[in-house]
Length: 62
Image 1 (cartoon, rainbow, N blue to C red):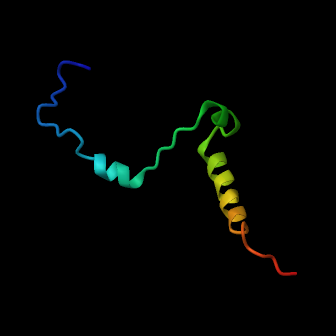
Image 2: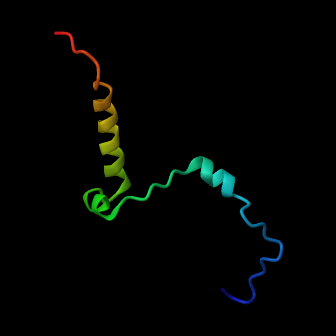
């Protein structure tokens, strides 16, 4: 950090609460991250899982 930067009037954690409300950070285990390398793939997979879970435990009428 350069010496000419002045943080004497800075407020620590000023945007922390806002950041927490708008962001969900999830850490994947290494073996999972290898199979799901980006957030789009993770989100697509989770959306499909949500769709499938709606059918779990429900009777299917034919």
